[in-house]
Length: 165
Image (cartoon, rainbow, N blue to C red; front, side, top):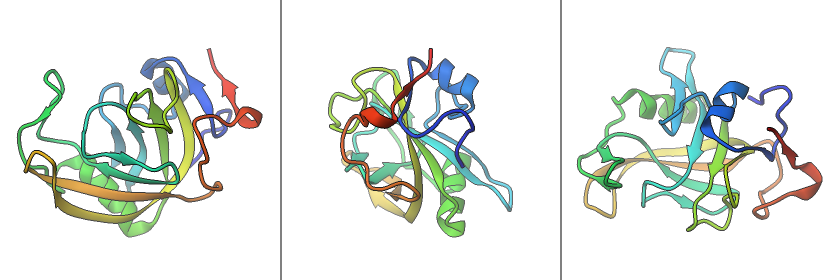
């Protein structure tokens, strides 16, 4: 759910600030979650990296983790729902518990912030499935849609923006 003191459209300069605020506590990984029986994903962070991600604002096609070499920005192996972060997002799909979505700077996405990171609200995981990615590897793929808040309409929401040092 939401983190008290950090409304939708709160901005953060670094992943360290996201971590300190508790909005997304993975300093590197894009998925934060728990795979226990009552678990699921708490948050995801969209930023540059996986070419198979597609950000449409109020809907997101998000690929899971695994099989990716960040130093070369390339997929080198299949993903699996047995990989714990992917399993956490799959649990969120099964339980329909919402997931916090954080967007990081990404020059290919209209919906990303111009710099740093922005908390963009709670989304529901509508679908979880395997899909062949652009590089030919099997990818854990998740379709998310905005849940609690109205559709995300652009890269800023001036009346609701709160910057955090």
